[in-house]
Image (cartoon, rainbow, N blue to C red; front, side, top):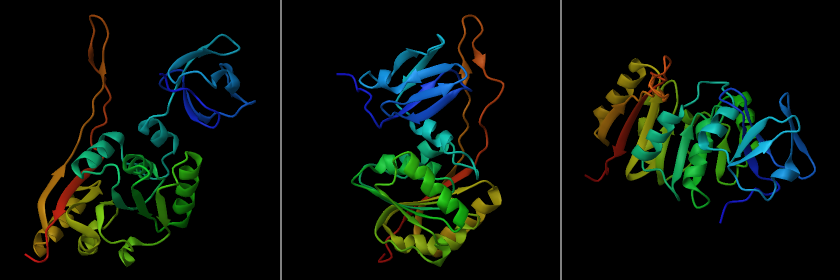
Amino acid sequence: MPDLIQDGDFVFIFLDGKRNWIRRVKAGESFHSNKGILAFDDMIGRPFGHKMESHSGIVFQVHRPSHTDVQIAMGRNTQIIYPKDAGTILVQASIAAGSRVVESGTGSAALTGILARAVGPAGRIFTYEIREDMYIGAQKNLTKFGLTDNVTQHHQDILEGIKEENVDAVVLDLATPWLLVDEAHRALKSSCFLVSYSPTIEQTMKTCKAMSEEGKWGMIKTLEIFQREIMVRENKTRPTTWMVAHTGYMTFARTMSVEE
């Protein structure tokens, strides 16, 4: 049975790669653009993934928003962690339903939202942000997209200490992550993951050095992911001339038991 759009659902209204919108469906109201009007009443009860014609005859697609759609809609007040990297973080750090994850900094909450969806109602995200403007902006984004139920926001410098204990993963997007490796080890369960995301190799080297010196971390590795779209056209398929290349270095490490 198809998943039907309900009053209050978020929808991804797609015209093309540059013209698309996320909106909350509200009975009696409409979506307006320069390509026409779509009545939300006409969406309610129809399946996600249907085509819909505006009053001016332009055909739109109506989908359920994906992780990427929501992440882009949150904006980029700071550099966000791209979907190609976010997906790698989820898989490499074994973040799944029920996981309890500490994150810092929150930024626009782009990664926070992806983490919250991944851990589900049985899990929880504890996210730290020192800047008040970013804390408030992230709160607005999470509320706007209905992602607050399993997220705890801390308006605090995480370098002052992690409040949580026995968490399943710690994900850092900080200027000085090497200063937090001992505190992250204290907060994590044994054999669980620290993830450090850094844009420069110097930050990455300092973080790896800090983890190597104490002997508290195992399986330390750093990854960099490239993404290239392929334009598939009959008799002229080729890669696009633009690609998402370097965005950041992701360092992963697992906690070793201090009893050994």
